[in-house]
Image 1 (cartoon, rainbow, N blue to C red):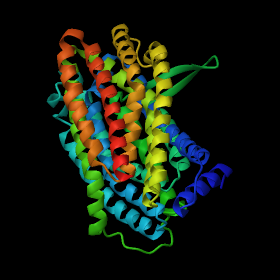
Image 2 (image 1 turned 30 degrees about the vertical axis):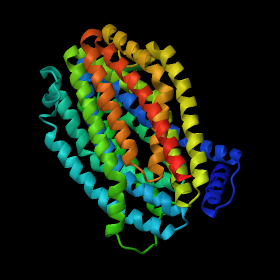
Image 3 (image 1 turned 45 degrees about the horizontal axis):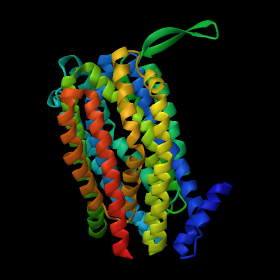
Image 4 (image 1 turned 90 degrees about the vertical axis):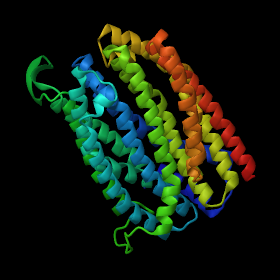
Amino acid sequence: MAVKDRISDNLLARIRGGLPMSAGQQLRLTLMLSVPAVLAQLSSIVMQYIDAAMVGSLGAAPAASIGLVSTTTWLFSGTCTAVSIGFSVQVAHAIGAGDMERARSVLRQAIVTVGLFGLLWGCTGMAVSGPLPVWIGGAPEIAGDASKYFLIYSAFLPVFQIYVLSAGMLRSSGNMKIPSMLSVMMCLLDVVFNFFLIFPSRDIAVLGRTVHVPGAGWGVEGAALGTGLAELTVAALMLGYLLRRSDYLRLKGEKGSFRPTRPVLKMAVRIGLPMAVEHTVICGAQIMTTVIVAPLGVFAIAANSFAVTAESLCYMPGYGIADAATTLVGQSYGAGRRDLTRQFARITVLMGMAVMGIMGVVMYLGAPAIMGTMTSDAEVLRLGIQALRIEAWAEPMFAASIVAYSVFVGMGNTLAPCLMNFFSIWAVRLSLAWLLAPSMGLAGVWTAMCIELCFRGLLFIVGLKIVFRKKH
């Protein structure tokens, strides 16, 4: 075991053992868990960025076809994540309490329950893939590719579900390194698969020599298949590590039932259901945003899709810190360390705001270069740069909402943050977008988003203060 791994394990053991932790130790542990989690999140969004850039090189229409169904893919992916979190939070609490037998029992039940859900959810996505682009207002010239992309995406959803579950379980145990490394690997595999599947066979110049490169030439379908194959490879490796080599959760040589029990399922539903409903409602709002953007034309749809992907490079560090927050708060809460729970909540929220504040500056200044890597179309480029520079102002408060949300999740409280997200997005963002889009175009939609994210961050900060005041 590496020195850094031993240090983080020792610090996590202090949480479970009820030992005091100085402010320096708390900050050090937060950083040690956050850095690999941030890398994992960044690799995930880089994979989407690669898809967008590669498909974008084919023209505005193929890019718009992926952008059209992107909010629906988030709906399905987010629901998979919510189902997994219903079990991984229980594992974090059990490990925090030092009950490793219960942690492994929850894991066994999760594999069966979540695996079946992934199969059902994937079949649902495949069933609706045909009419979906028409439902959300896609133009005929992009509906066909959008439908094919979503069909292939849905076929790999069971694989994605296992990937999410395995990564979440490892993070709950305090292991951020392996999910991070395998996520980076998935990103690299996506590049390789896309390189051969998206583009047709062609000749390229390498060191002054012409090299023939074979290719399938499947375009949008190749992008979906490349991502799916990368997910399949990494999901198998992640699950294998979890079951055979995880310090706290490996099942190799262990005996126990895989049959789901009522108490575990009940708790999983209590934690995961509000998140699943929230993802559904929020992604419904994002789909409504797509409906608002769609009449603005193919250029606006493509620019909106590219800008969303580009902005993800800015906010994914926040989600990485949020992953660390769920682990730290979850184990502290499970160990009954309410003082430590509050300290880790404060540290992670402030860290997220600082990091995303810096990323916001980078996004504002680098918007032309970032968008330029995904499209060469002048109008798409102009609209995308404008959107990113509007959104940059909201990043610190967006970070507050992202990390605070995970603090709530770590404590097993998912209802309150879900309600806050629901109110903020539907009452503020959609209302403003509907009002501003006719006169301001795509800039109006992103202005509404910026205002709403600032409001949401403030809402979550106040919510956390209220919760901790009640608990103390």
